[in-house]
Amino acid sequence: MMKASLKACDVVIFGGGGDLAMRKLLPALYHLDQDGLLAKNTRIIGASRREMSAADYQAKVREALDEFVPKSIGDEKTWPRFKERLSYVSVDAQQESDFARFNDAKVGADDKDVVFYLATSPDLFGSICSSLANHGLNQERMRVVLEKPLGRDLTSSRAINDEVTQNFGEKQIFRIDHYLGKETVQNLLAIRFGNTLFEPLWDSAHIDNVQITVSETVGVEGRWGYYDKAGALRDMVQNHLVQLLCLVAMEPPGRNDADSVRDEKIKVLKALRPIEGANAYTKTVRGQYAKGMINGKEVKGYFDEEGSNPESRTETFVALRADIDNWRWAGVPFYLRTGKRLGQRYSEIVIQYKAIPHSIFNDESNRQLQRNQLIIRLQPEEKISLTVMNKVPGAGEGMNLQPVDLNLSLSEAFHNKRSPEAYERLLLDVMRDDATLFMRYDEVEAAWKWVDGIMAAWNQTSERPKEYASGSWGPAASMALPIKDGRNWHDY
Image (cartoon, rainbow, N blue to C red; front, side):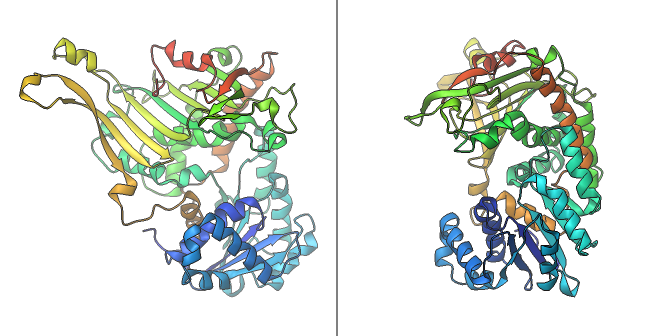
């Protein structure tokens, strides 16, 4: 069970009637209330341009909960309490005069903490923060949460962050990446730093390679125009995959607090070897999905989607090899890949250990011998497994070995506890003023600087992304990426 927030606060959601709010944020807040983790006087205030009464907003939220939190229908203890927390303020983010309505609604009254969640286009982050500051809504007890994407390159990201930091201090800014709120991601820290078993073996002397995969079966889902301006490198690698890489590769922090953890993550980002110029052709593969079959159903290709432009060179798939130039990871490749319309939906981290230096077993066992693997599965199920070699039972079997998985399934190990959604953890952390799982300004800049080098190299060539069939595992060239190093992807 997560610890309760320390005190009541006002949670203001800009874009309070939008898709993110209805699908993720409000269900997450509902679950926190259901679990008794919201203080009595905590309020939730939706804010958007649309004129709407508080009763209309409450009805809209109830409709969303019925769709996205089915169990809420029968939970008539939580809903009346949650409903009373809900209110609404009509605010045009581009009209500074509208922000006076927050004062009319007594946001932050009685010295309550305030969380402003910006579930809007990043283009509005600067103007919203400026208007909040001009109405005295940037006091030390007030915090602002920024949704991704924070720009589309280092220059635009820096412009957004500079606008925000002109009005809020760095300690008041929470840059969210929902992947970091997943239970198994946090368990990665527990595995490394809460046990004597793994950390002594967590280096180049014992680990052969690390693989991080975030695979999606969906396409752009009617959002071609938006996605084509981003692409897989900006949308997934720059934040989600790079953040997972940092948690795998970071040194043990001195303490489990926000700055100690983030200080170690920034060291990893600064140690990433640049992928620039000709290196981009040997270290990266990009692709675009074509027609294919997923779960027995034919699906569209990228250029069959509504609003598509056949001249687009935006990638829907990226695979790359990253190298970290420090003592712990020298010579250990980190293989990252992500893509849409792939064969299966899952996210996982694979720690591939080195082979034993010499096998004493018979030929049959030698043929079966596999390297140890630690597999951290983030979705769809959350579990951790360790592959070890074990003797086949039976007196007549000799010393034949076969791989066996030692599994920790969070749902089975903690069957009496509901595993919270990522946004639940992160929203509660914001209310508690705990920034450990959020990105600091220098982290964002370092990640963009590394990704910009890759993007610049791609833009210097006329080569198009490689086509891959929907339902496959990406372009054939991506399969060859680890093969030329004498390795394979985990699923092959």
